[in-house]
Amino acid sequence: MAYLASIALERTLPCLAQPGRIIVVGSPAQDLKEVIPFLATLPTAIAYTPQPPSLTLRRQPGLITLQPDRVSITQVADEAEGLRLLAALTDAINATWEHRTELVAPTSPRRAPRPLDIWELLPQTNCGECGEATCMAFAFQLVQQKQALGACAALTRDEAFGDRRLALQGMLGSGG
Image 1 (spheres, rainbow, N blue to C red):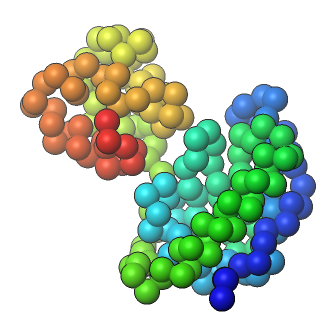
Image 2: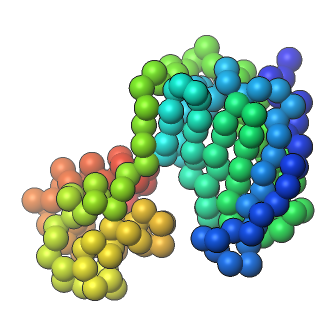
């Protein structure tokens, strides 16, 4: 039996992060409190709070935030896409719930990496080879997924930065 029947479209709002796009806000047919910890095991999870449960997932583009009684999806093209995304999210929630016995739900909070967290691991040469003026600017672009880690030439060509590169890949949830 499915955990969740549906997520109803509650309203749309303008998306300030991406003009011309919207934020879709949905109401789940059932409280998501029990399933959120299992959803926090997904590779796209970037921020998780156990009590009260809330989870933010990265999507291309934008974010999905789940709370027990509300779901919001940013950077959506239009209401029709929002409805498709809410249906797909319902399916993903049900699939995760079906496999919950195979998952280990986290018990501690996880937060999204901040630009300063990323900058500390970058070479800090401000070489500009990535197309950004500084490593801090590059860190901001990485957080916003507007740059790829592989754009940092020093990280890719200098083996001395191998550990840092792996740490950054883990923080950003990327392979390179």
